[in-house]
Amino acid sequence: MHLGALILAAGEGTRMRSKLPKVLHSLAGKPLLSHVIETSRTINPDEISVIYGHGGEAVKNHLAADDLNWIEQKERLGTGHAVIQALPHLQQVDQVLILYGDVPLISGPTLVSLLSCLHSSDLALLTVDLQDPTGYGRIVRDRDDRITRIVEQKDASARELEISEINTGIMAVNRDKLETWLSRVDNNNAQNEYYLTDIIALAVADGVNIQAVHPHNEEEVMGVNDRKQLAYLERFYHRNRADELMQSGVTLADPGRIDIRGELKTGQDVFIDCNVITEGSVSLADGVSIGPNVVLKNCAIGVDTEILANSVLEDCEVGSGCRIGPFARLRPETQLADQVHVGNFVEIKKSQVADGSKINHLSYIGDSEVGSKVNIGAGTITCNYDGANKFRTVIGDRAFIGSDTQLIAPVTVGEGATIGAGSTITKDTPAEQLTLSRAKQFSIDNWVRPVKKAKD
Image: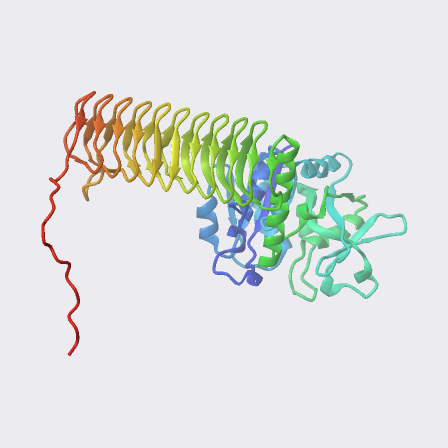
């Protein structure tokens, strides 16, 4: 059997009060629609199609991928109408899984359970019981507990409004049956729209015993219609990830104050303090300690390394036994070997630092190659940019760079060289020698400091 996943993402999302299409609003660092697409891929469908409308090209361009088919719904006349637009593009599939671009936390295992129902039925629904079902279509069952139809909130009677089991909109259906039923759907309802849910009554009339599956939790099927709902799901997502981390051996100072916006891999005995944000792909090896208010984006941290408070690391690699921060910044293409110390208010960009080197205070190291066991004093700057081009600085093993030194690239500091504090180095310096570049110091006798003249 060939499976097609169909994601409805054409809604305008007026309650978001935003110029950005609703499905492009971010949850855990990724667009809502991106979450649904990634989950649909986990069940290995033969095709994935996305129906887009509002913000059309922006949605399509932002999430374009080779395995996605994009289908435009030019007129938004309801969910049934949306699926009708897609049917000509689903000729090669036998089963259709219908998902929604604003329901981001649906899980792969739940979808697998739903699809398994198609072995014994032509139609399966994902339903859930809510304490407050206001706003959702209700599942109407007969005395034998069989599903007979779905009634939308605006079309429901007072008795039907008391039903707590609601339709999530997510369903799996035989493709040929879907086409047949949709051809019989009309728009005779309060919204004058073609409801996809109307196929339920048609399936019942054809003698289909509709199957229902429930998700693991109701948050899986919660849609995002406004920013309050988005914030709720954001925090729910992070709390779930926090639980997973703690179960895998990570200590969290406060599970309610961590944001995981992407993929986070951790070893054993990792400690993460409050208000840490991880983005993209981050890996923390055994024994890593992350201080408060740290931001980690697309970086790998080695065994027993400590990242102190308020540091920002992006697109970089850090070796084992390092100590970074507080208030340090590692920018893209930075590579630190083992036992490297990077202290407070140090910024490193596009540089390699070898084993055991120290850059402890108030320094900028850019476009540089720093050898092993180098000591770089406070206030050191690699001047790598002349306003048009960037150049490299090379500092040999065991070099000692005095405080307040400017290294004007391109320049090489030899192995074991010492640069005196306050120097401006414009030429290569020899190995194992002291190099100084200072103006002569002198004092002026009988000098009087200027004072302000008294006003008349």
